[in-house]
Length: 253
Image (tube, rainbow, N blue to C red; front, side):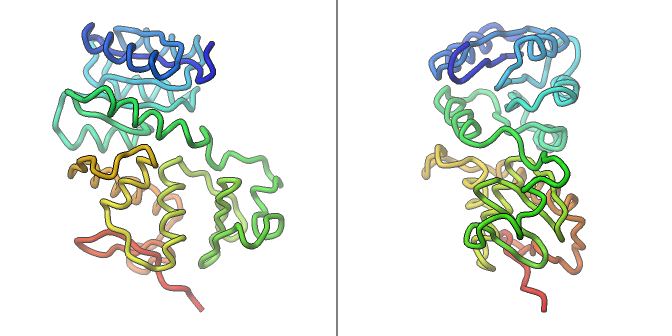
């Protein structure tokens, strides 16, 4: 196994499969592949994959069902690949547990950049044992490293979040978005800026950002609000700025 670990390509189109395999091998992965969904689930399980690229339109079961099955046992980074332009595909992928998505045709360097951006982050967020330091960020962490707001405490070094002392499990994208808004201290962050937050430092500044990219941010924010049990009418943390983006809600007395 290579230093980066195993990548699995689940793709029924041989040309696309060969392309993705080549990109991931050049990036430094040990690469395995599958042409059907059920086979892909088995390969991911057997090889303990770190990264999975997953086609939506597979011949036996669709990519969303494959994604659901993989998420039952694996926290691998998953990039959905789709030839469709339907925004519903993007939303379904993100709701089901995908880390990112790419629409075919895509440039090989774009796929490599997306994977590199994901690999720089920890693979787990918020999975902590009861009574661990991550559940006591206000008491155990150095004050200067913890961002606090209205009962929420985020430790960027431990990548942990707690609300009123209770640990909160977030995805990588949810954590990074919350971190960006907390650092902004009430400044408005546009959806375009937040797309770059999700993509990471490997996403080029001049890269095209589509409406689907911005819509994906909306989905992540919606998932984050649900986990925070946020009241949309009286937000405690995340405030929508219509037509622009989001900012941190005012400090409560």
